[in-house]
Length: 94
Image (cartoon, rainbow, N blue to C red; front, side):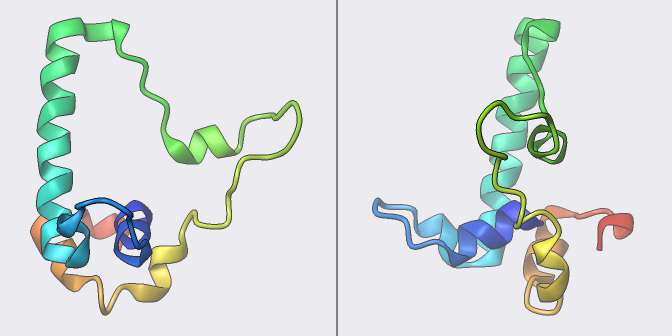
């Protein structure tokens, strides 16, 4: 949810027209999930998966990783309904 909101709010400098609507963001994320599943099947445990929430709370050597966006989407649930419906976000995350 936070990543989808971030994509929607960011003005990308390239041709990223999929980021202009929550429906398109959902489809883009579905495609990324399919690619991720494919590579996990191909390489199994060789694929390192680090959830962002865990990554940003890890100990840092110099400066902490940006954490302010974790959970930010909760304030935007009403406008994110197209993403929620199309991506199939679990009810426990909404």
